[in-house]
Structures are given as C-alpha cells and as structure tokens.
Picture 1 (cartoon, rainbow, N blue to C red):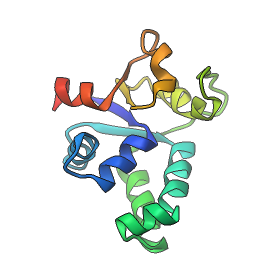
Picture 2 (cartoon, one colour):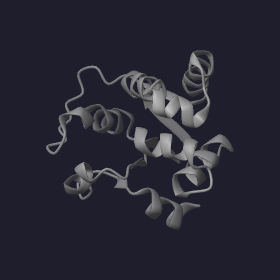
Picture 3 (cartoon, rainbow, N blue to C red):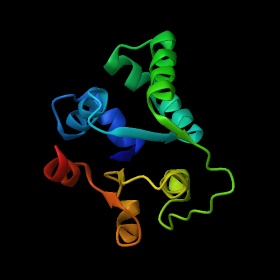
Picture 4 (cartoon, rainbow, N blue to C red):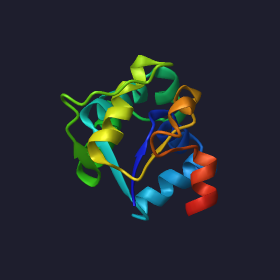
Length: 136
C-alpha cells in the first residue's frame, strides 16, 4: 500500500508516538506501507520542523531536521507534481498534497484536515483514525 501523510499527521505522529498519528508513523518506519512524498511536501515538513515550538518539543536541531528530511527522501517514493492540476477549494495551500495524490496514484492521502472533507468522495482521502481502524 502506498500512502501520503499530511504534514499535520506526520508531525503529530512524531510528537505523540503513542497516539493515532504516531501509530501511522511507526507503521511506516516498520515498512508496513510505502510513503509517497513530493518535493513540496518535504519542504513543508522541513519548514514546520524548524518552528521553535516544534524544535523544542522534539528537541531537534538543524542537523537532526536535515537528517530526518534526508531519511524521508531516501525511504519514500518522491513524485514530481510539476504541471499537475489540483484544487482544494477550502485551502489552496493544500493543493500540493492533492497534486501528490493525483500524480502518484497512491492508495490513500491520510489527513485530519477538514479542508479535504468535500473531496473524500472524489479521491482516496482518509482520516488518521479511520486508517488505523481499517489497516493497522
């Protein structure tokens, strides 16, 4: 199974490894499924990991963040989304996630973001809790 993790799910999983997002991140690390990313997802994750509040919570410095992004790039499938048309009407800033889903034809986009609610019937989009209930 090939999945895309919204940044909020990935970061929640790193900060709360015992919670639902943490179970998903741990399942990826155990290679229970393949992670799919795009360069824009990697850039967003790196940017959010650098927020002072997140850095403090994880106790990560610049080097640790760089190594984690390199690990993601190495272990995940990186897809090109240049030229892929995607529209998340509720939040254009999420277009890159939908474009990654469209370009990769991944099995699921896992997100807790309600901005995707109106797209769930059109694309394979699932909440973290539903994903855990069905697959983990």
